[in-house]
Image (cartoon, rainbow, N blue to C red; front, side):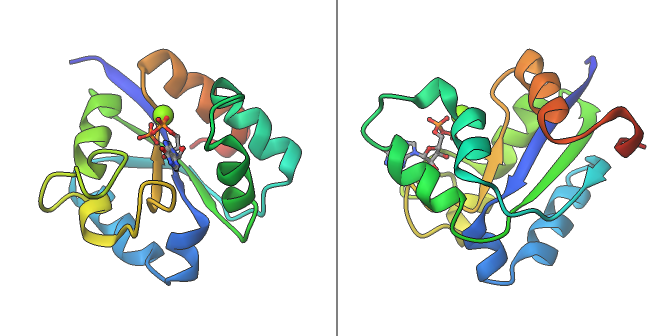
Length: 139
Ligand code: IDP
Ligand code: MG
């Protein structure tokens, strides 16, 4: 399996609920190496740009609203097969559909407020890590 990078974001609901430590512990126990981590409050422009692929979808405005509603924590992760393994760890977008024991099943309230982001392809993993982290912030 090739070593890959993937971007996680602990979303504002995760930070609001004080679940950062629990979620990061699960990520580390699953074998992911943390290359970089920060806490920021996204502007509408930044959140809109990050989710630009969803522009025009019915949930887009609500998604931008939610992602700017409080601080979030982008985390750059590395591991063999990181992208697929991270998506397995977090579970389906809607916690109702997420497998037992996944982060979204355990902690998420609904499809919009679903605790954590994960990149959807190795290419997007690299692009999204670069969206939030400069080379000197990845160690
Ligand atoms: P993903 O985060 O599992 O990759 P995407 O389809 O890429 O899911 O959607 C990005 C984010 O947009 C989701 O994590 C969720 O927060 C939000 N979202 C997606 N679909 C819906 C929906 O039908 N209703 C409300 N929010 C949604
Ligand atoms: Mg996605």
